Length: 477
Image (tube, rainbow, N blue to C red; front, side):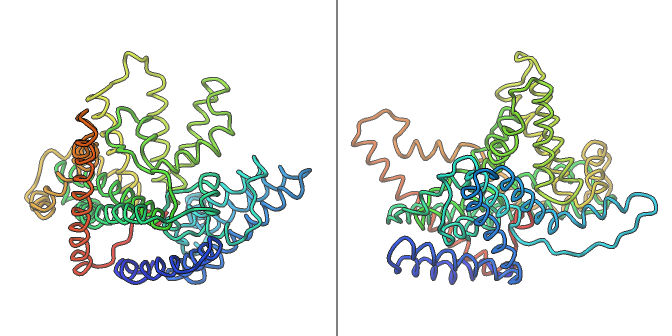
């Protein structure tokens, strides 16, 4: 996206909010948001507006056909699912498939060089959600083309989610009210997400980029582990920050999107991790792939196969690379191991959390590395690089700074339920005290939180004024 953060924050967003507030009626508000969403998408690659609109037209037409041709509804729905996935494959996976075929002896196919449209994985899955929801319940169909356009193209979550299921927001599109309280709460949430990205993710991301871009002679166990931990924090605060921004913007316009992250690094198992990490994606695969495949209803072997299929698709959804596929299969394999362990052997509490963090951290090396050989280099140094050289020590020194370790400390606190516990304490929810005392603490919490949000906004503005454009990691998925 060439839409800079400053332009979005100080020009595009205020203008859209003002226009949306001024126009009367829900249909007019929907039209304003739909048009502005298309304009927002067009700032990246204007030609891909046609692809986005093609997705809307295909899924709108499919919904009408599913309800209009009941004798052929299954065939129609299946054809549209194939068409949606076909468009995704053409634009996202063509060169990946060509590169894989070129490994074979005697095969040499030139790559197409197709540019990946921003957010194609997200708006494709939202279009599929609509068609499948209509297939399951024909009352979900809409004859309002603008409504479906807004659902698929709504700019806060168009580029990097969260993935919103149609049945979760259909009624909100038809009737919602943006109250002052909801607008204030949404603004606070947006600022929190922006702060996660600019102040936390970008800071630790610089150290992660250095480690993953280093030569073999520069790395040792210290710098490799530091880089891996920094990336684990970077991707969490990058993506949860974007989700917070999308949820906050949704509230400003009257929408209530579901949470996408619930302290995943506090999980006691990988299964729990996936109930807390990228919730919209994992629930999408559960509802539209895992359960239709049979879920856990057809025996242990079939359940294991279904989980492997889901995590293979999860990895491939994230990117056209074997790194992502192996990352997904890694998670699937560990989940199967967890399921196979006797209950008394499953680590809990502290040990469970530590093992889960280790598993996630190691898997993210595959996720971040540009190639499998790059991931192999990181793993090698993490587990064998115990003899530092002068060059590797100097490189470690270039990675480290007071700001980095201070930011990492804040990251550790922020990714655990510490802020939530502080909020409960300040609001008096843990005190069991009288109502008037609890109400007073609630007011104190509101003052504290909005004052803190203002200070964070000032820091973000200062950061934006002195930094280059740095897109969210999930923009490329």
